[in-house]
Amino acid sequence: MNKTTVATILEKKQKNNKLTMLTCYDYIMAKLISKDVDMLLVGDSLGNVQLGYENTIPVTIENIIYHTKAVKRGNSGALIVADMPFMSYEADIKSAVINAGRIIKEGRAQVVKIEGGSEIIKQVQAIVNAKIPVMGHLGLTPQAINKFGEFKVQGRNKEDALKLINDAKLLQEAGACAIVLEAIPEDLAKEITKTLTIPTIGIGAGRYCDGQVLVVYDMLGMFVDFTPKFVKKYANVGQIIQEAVKNYIDEVKEGKFPEEGNIYK
Picture 1 (tube, one colour):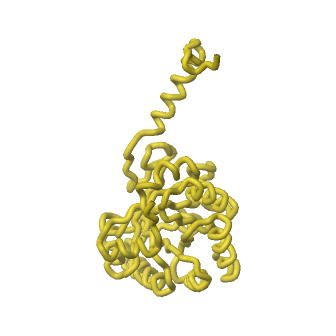
Picture 2: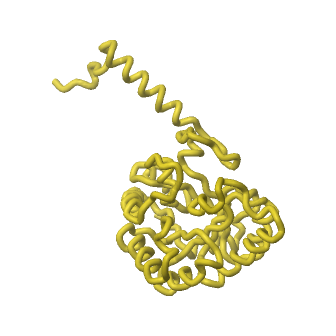
Picture 3: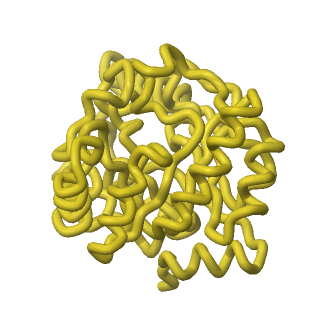
């Protein structure tokens, strides 16, 4: 079984081989998708798509650890990246390192992902110094929803674009192994990708990033509350599930299930 590592994703950027990442929150999904995808992201998006919250803010470190352990048990070689949830790293460097360590030691992730740029560089440096790989996250950072006020494209004016470029450089200098770029103009993502020696993973950042990531329930058509512009649906699994459940209910009511092959003699 070939295993993806931090070294693997850097090598793929150097060879101009595109990287793939999908979110994953449980054992069975990990079993289904981890053989083919490079990276599994145990994202705090689980707050929206699994726990029913309106955003990622309520997600706890215990939630992330619990789901990461489940993904680890079903993983077949993908690199497991886990989000550090809101307020698990912002307050101080010590708590950031301790919480990152818990995600690696208890959750058994291989990389932690942190949202933010210059304001959290010291935390990134400290976590990396503790021998824990860090993936950055710039652009639209969902944990900052109360600051932004709404989910919208970032980096459209010159000042914001320059800050994103500078933040990307700072994250690389601090030791980040890759950076997720979310909801920024394609040209800006292209410039950042060309500037960095570490991989960029785009989500709503256009075609020129070193890789792409999507929420697995979005691309499978299972999460129907809203669909961002950057999502492409590769299946309509939600409809298939609904139809299967309806057929089950109908057969039970009509006495068609269980049938001969489902009965013990």
